[in-house]
Image 1 (cartoon, one colour):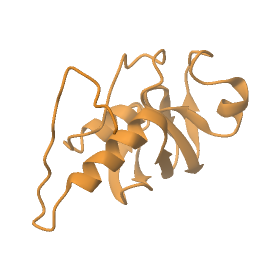
Image 2 (cartoon, helix red, strand yellow):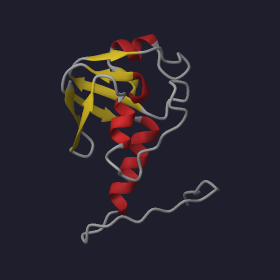
Image 3 (cartoon, helix red, strand yellow):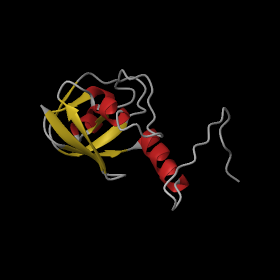
Length: 123
């Protein structure tokens, strides 16, 4: 059964079945700027806060998601599977990437993406 997942930060929605993890569903939006890491629950790049809905979850590294966070709905998108419609807020590294992409969007509806091997220093 497919469920609708809403990303609160952007208002985007996508359909995701119960056998597909939420990160894979997000990737299927074909939207640049959704960072992915190990895709196995160990790096924490895909951390989200589930605001509404039910989901099944698989084991996540305690190094990136504490038991308290997990109990409050702060989980890894690569390790949750929707069991109903979900509303999620992206947090951490993923949120920074999405916010940066949105601020780079112009009134003309296109986005500029810059890749670098060195961190950008703020002045």
